[in-house]
Amino acid sequence: MKHNDFLKDLHIGKIIKEIALQKGISSKKIADAIRRDQHNADKIFKMNDMDIEDIIRISYLLKCNILDFIAKKYLSHITCTNYPVDTKSCLLKIDMRSHTVTVYDDFNHSDFFKNIHIGRHIWEVAKKKEWSGGDLANKLHCSRGLISILYRSRSLKVKTLIQISDALQYHFIAEIYLSQMIMGAFLDTLDNCIISFNPHQIRILNANDKSILMVFQQNDDKKQLSTSYKN
Image (cartoon, one colour):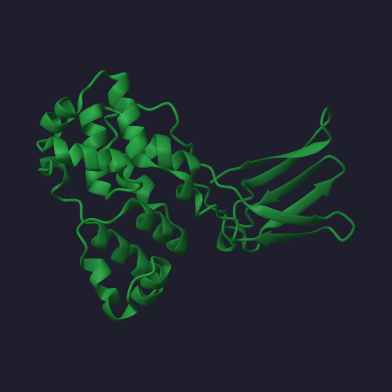
């Protein structure tokens, strides 16, 4: 399969290295997150391409959605129906008696991809477009045998999936993966925040500019708290 020209400047390892250095996370921790030999951990930063599941694991470790960054840069020309909005989720323990809020930063659904069979999704999209294996092979400049392998694959490398998304004009990364990625609102976002309570609402404000970070509003019909988060 030939690589498209628009992917020639995409280097996964360099992206990961830059973020890891900013956050002070070692290559050995990254290697451990993706179950790689730690003796060769620095080789991760030299990887031009990487399996999409490994990128998801690293995104959770670095607390930075690398997959989303790549998708916005290289697949912005493809419309999709299931692209996630720029929101975050968090898990809070709220004690109304003591007026205290405990924030947990490990609320990350990082293993959702275990139930994804990407090859089956590719086959379904190709079938809807009435494309044969030969049609897709011609578009990807590869053999029909490789298409059969793609259809059986549970996971793929990111560049391969970008190429397939471009060929079929279907945003597999957003529709299949990003739509299920839940990344927590991390503790450093809520440091020194201002929390106000009343019987129906809890407001969490940024201590510096008083902007709203989170609002927990009681739903009168269901007697539940609904949550909104603002970056």
